[in-house]
Amino acid sequence: MRTVSEILMQPFGVGLRLAAMLLLIGSLCVLLLTVSQRRGVLPILLCALHVVFDLCLLTLLFDGAYRIDWLPYAREYPAAVQWLMGQPYAAVLGVEILSALLLGLHIFRIVRFARSHPSAQAVKQTVDLLPTGICISDESGLILLSNLKMNEYLRALTGSIYSGADALWQAVTARGVRQGEQYLLRLDDGAVLLAERTELTMDGQKRVQITCEDVTEQYRKTAEMNEKNERLKELQQRLKHYRQEQEELVVRQELLAARTTVHDQLGSALLMGKYHLEHPECSDPQTLRLLLEQLNVSLRSETEAQEQDVDAALQTAAGFGVEVSITGTPPRDRALRLLLGQAIAECAANAVKHAHGSRLEVTISENCFEIVNDGVPPAGEVVPSGGLQSLRLAAANAGCRMELESAPRFRLSIL
Image 1 (cartoon, helix red, strand yellow):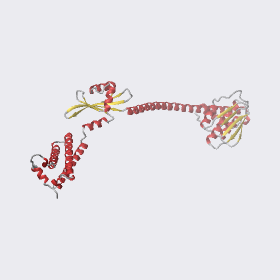
Image 2 (cartoon, one colour; image 1 turned 90 degrees about the vertical axis):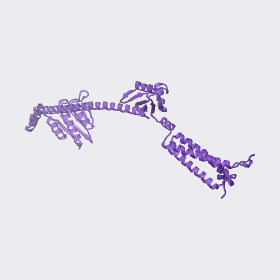
Image 3 (cartoon, one colour; image 1 turned 180 degrees about the horizontal axis):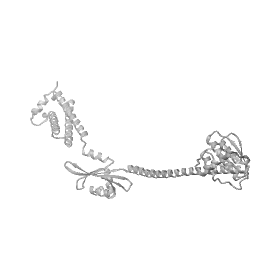
Image 4 (cartoon, rainbow, N blue to C red; image 1 turned 30 degrees about the horizontal axis):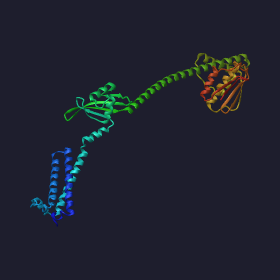
């Protein structure tokens, strides 16, 4: 195998010298990076030895490539150069490959250390990107670290980013509202901040940390929730008042129903008594007994609202001496049948008391019916009161409406 001296001036030898030069430059860069990372004495010493080795190899290769026969004086190669020139070129190539591998190992360790130990600049850049303002100062108030967001808050609160930490905290306490260990304050642009001051110990020295967090959205949602709670309380009070009024209304309706029942039964009893007094030939013991029972119950006020269907209403009307003519079929629905019975009884009583009539004509079609009497028509518009008002309420509760006509004859319609 050829020696180094035989191939040193050839292109392959030039490549060996160029590779040695690149290895020296790379080892120098690795040494500088290792020193900047402050990894300790041993890594720096190993990198320095690598630089010395690459420097010696490059020096020997360039010294061996120098033509001493061009010198005007006699000179011999140093012993180290002569020794290297006599070695196989493959040995030098292997040494350079080994140096390159060591250089790659150094670079790998540098990269791994950089990833696990971020630099101060990387830490500063990361802190600047935080959405929360952070300020760290010493005990005298001199700011040691302040990110971009805190600089913005410093300018908004104190007017300058060069203000100290003490001035910043004084502005916070003056404009903010204390909430435990924190202060809630609003900036001129509408932003709401939550500021907090804590004491830290770093490397045996006391440090003061001030943080300002933007809680505008949370504050807005909290305000909306409080407003909704107030509205809910108001609605609850209104519902409570409504329930009380509803209870009073139910009581009033029950009293009205009871009074209406007493009024109707007492009126019916009086009308039946009048009829039997005027027509003694039509009286019978059973009818008189029924009349006395109704009078006793009504006068003692122990009566309860009793449901009266069509058949019972016809009997009541007959007791008044009123003949009822029905056209159509009474409805099957129980509520409508009760409503029809109440209407017949009320119209029969009113026909005797007010119109001096003796006949009712009832016309039924589907769920509607109308009642007409043969008495004297009313002199004017009929205003519902007493039994008619109770009938109107009963119709509304059944999902119907009541209409009254005065001319040409009195007409009551349930639609």
